[in-house]
Amino acid sequence: MSVIHQNIELMMSSALSGAGMDVIIVSTTTVHQEIYWQKRLELTRGQISKDNAIILAVHEDWTGGAGNALGTLYAFTRAVEKAHRVFDIDLREKISNGASVAIYHTAGQGTRLAPLPGSESNNKSGVKLPGMLEIDGNIQPITILEAVIRQTSVYAASRTARISVFWGDQIFIPATPVGYSPVHHADILCCLAPMPSAIEWKERGLEKYGLVAVAANGDATQVEKITYDTANSLIEKRTLSVEKGVGVSLGSFSVSYELMTALLEEFNEELEAKEGKLDSDPHFWMPLTLDEDTYLSLMRQKGVGPSDSKNHYIRMAAFKARFRSGNPSARLVGAVDVGNNCYWWDFGHVQGYLANVIKINQQTDEAIIMRRFFGITANIIGADLGEAVEADNCSLVINSKINKGKIVNSVVIGVNTGCLDIRDSVLINVSCPSITVCDALLYNVAEPTSLSMESGSIRADAYVPFTHHYALISSIERDGKDDWEQVLSGNPLSYRELSEENKAVDIMQAEMFSTMEHDRIKRAIFDTIW
Image 1 (cartoon, rainbow, N blue to C red):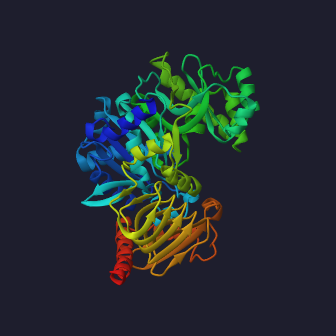
Image 2 (cartoon, rainbow, N blue to C red):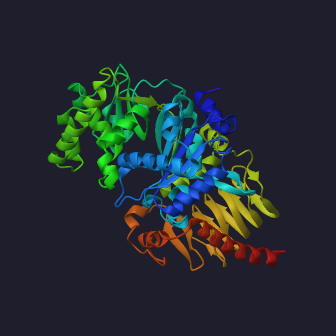
Image 3 (cartoon, rainbow, N blue to C red):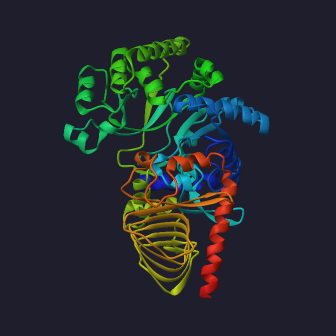
């Protein structure tokens, strides 16, 4: 059995075997998201996390956002307070006694994934994927966040008395063993490989990513989005050492409890005032691993003025000196390799979402791994299909009711219709009398009339409880980040306007309203047919 196959089995068994994270902290942006994830993740214990996992959903009430560095520290402090106030648990004591803790960041508007997050009341990590869970006796699709929690559970055994940080929109299946013994106070997940040639660097688009370079002794250096020539120059100057490889950073990391405590003390003033914005790569790992001149040069390329960069570098240098004063040999930053041939599924933008979901239909090892990860054991699961339905051997049909039609190379989940004619498409939670689409994405659509869309179309419906049901149309080649302020043709409002309206929406009430809209259409469809 390959390492990837071994890792996938560990992921699938961790919840039942009690091998997952002891404490799960979810950092959200609103009170409604906090309430939603607290309830949902408590209900999915035993399927996603282990039965006795401590669930702590918190929200970041920080004007303008804290950035993922200060945001991590703030989420931790909020979780410590909530654990004590709500559950009478001393979280710090649990960690010092060896608990494994994971923080999952769900902040951000999900602009590149628009309009799907709008359909989930701005809850971008609540966007659905092709796996099913039993929640309160009902079968429901797994969310991106739940998939991430399942996937990252395999690091718990190696990270006792550590705090891990993960992002709620990407899943990776490591091609290297997940068990390891941490020797650094911080370690960054990355895909390592030998230093590539200039051609390979360009082909892999490495200038678009944060990179981690690993020296012969295992110490790591973090750099942000540099060209091959810049990387080569830094290697020649011995600023970067790449004896053990260089690779794309996944952004996720873990820190020792000692380092977390020191960082909380260092940035206590910002945390108390809820002011400032710092990100982990440019404001933690780069100043801690680079010399001053290189740091200032790279930050200048990011548009940061030299005085700001210099002041921050001096601050982090003093922090590093204090941290090492009691232990001069302390090793600060290392790397955890997930393998350059790992599987990495990015659901953070619509193109990646569609491509990765429909990938499950392929006859490849990656598709086999994906089906195992999402618990897909057959092509048709829990579906009521009429005799006139033709579905090819690769399409996936789950929890759907379809009277007649044709399904070719598509993923169909929670679809209720009298007639379905689709090819190369993904339909999740769709109720409509008749649907004809090709190369399309329909998400949470409740449409009372027949639906036919052009190739490459996207439609996602948004539900503002008991007042508005919006149909949002886009196309696969568009980037929601670029379209954020626009009212696209056929749409009632812009993504930004919907996001603003969704801020006050109770997510559970929105789900109830969505269910009512779908039920109304389903009754009309099937009362007519039968």
